[in-house]
Image (cartoon, rainbow, N blue to C red; front, side, top):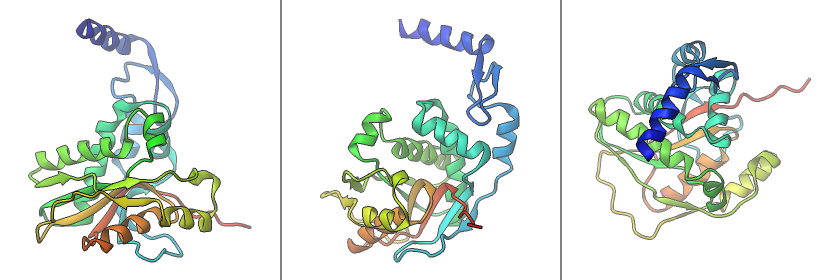
Length: 234
C-alpha cells in the first residue's frame, strides 16, 4: 500500500535523524531535508548578474542566485548526485526567484532547461533540470507569470565536464546539443530563458544559446542557481 508507506516514511522523518543536505548535520524532523540554519543561509542569497572571465562567444546575460559554495553547493550536490529528489521543489522555488529578477517586470516566459545526456538522466532517475524547471514554472505561475517549459533541445553524449579544462569544456559543449525537430514558433514578446544549475566557464550556456539563435530563437537571459568562483593561483 503506497499510502501506508508514505505515512510510515513521514512518521520516521519526525523521529529519526536525517542528514541536512546543506551542512551534513544529522537532526530529527528535517521534513524538507535542510536544517533551519541552512534554510536561512539560502534565504539570504539574492540573485545577481554573473559573467565568467573570459566569457565565451554567444553567452547571453546570466543571473545566478549565489556562488557555488556553502549550503547552496551542498544542496545542489545532494539533489543531483545523491538522489535527494525531494529537494527539487525548494530548489525550483529558488530558481523562480532568479528568473523573476533576470526577466524583470512580469511578462510571458519560455523556460528552456539545458538537457541531461541520456546516460546522466538514467543515472539520476530523470532529467534533473527539467524537473527543476517544472517546479520553477509552477512557482512563477502561482505568482501570476504566464510560463511555459519547453524541452527544445536534446543532448548528445559527451565527456564528464569535471575531467576537462576550460578549453576542453568549450570544445565538448560546442557539439553537444541539437534542436528537436518539432518546435512551435515562439510568440513575440516572450522572454526566452535558458535555465541551468551551475555556470562555470559559460561554455554550456553559450553553446545552447548558439544552437537556439541559429533557429531564430535568441535567448533573452540565462538563469542559474550557482556560479563557480574562479580560483586564484598563487
